[in-house]
Length: 150
Image 1 (cartoon, one colour):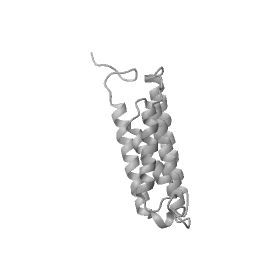
Image 2 (cartoon, rainbow, N blue to C red):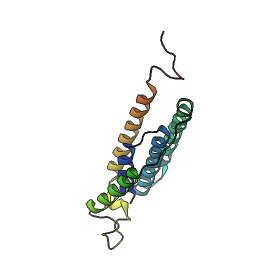
Image 3 (cartoon, rainbow, N blue to C red):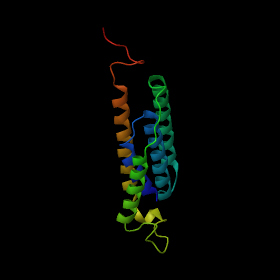
Image 4 (spheres, helix red, strand yellow):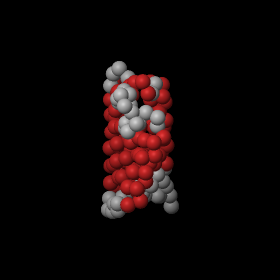
């Protein structure tokens, strides 16, 4: 269930237009990844550190976006909800150990499904993507927080 949520959130992120919703999806994805890492590892320390790092980055992004785009309106989309439901359903049918198909709770035991190295690499890749997105959002030459060259 957590992996299907991560897959759906990554698909939904591509369709977001406002920075606040992008930040909210990144935060939910970070919490989801922290839950997966905490369940697969013997301690929640690494996931706790990741959540703290993501929260601090999201607070910085929130401050920046509240200065830049304070009056943008959020319009909900039916197609976005349809994409979320479709990707979740497809992921459940693709995975061999989904909750719908399992009979003996093997899908709830994430230790047997994923290894610790895969979770660590996924977290590293996710943090790299978030860092690239933040750098791309901040490197503008014109805006309220940048000096424009005359």
